[in-house]
Image 1: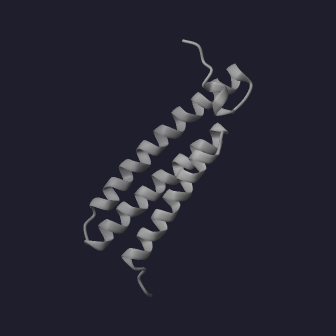
Image 2: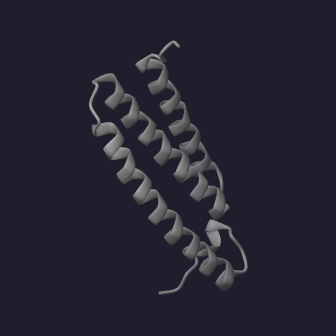
Length: 102
């Protein structure tokens, strides 16, 4: 079995991060914004895994476990906020949430 090169994995991680950033900047729907954030977080995790494999250290995998825990917390809080925005504004448009009163 052939191993994938370090540069190729980092290129895939960079492409995933760029796609997530483009989705974050282009979309107004809050669910798509959350999905774009998840793609960006997973791209960073992929880069940590590749770096750990490159240098033969388990540190990349340990950091990835922390990234998974933070991503799970982010999803739960994010979805709760999306539900509240949907209930209050009857829309998932991020511009609608920008009109909140203090």
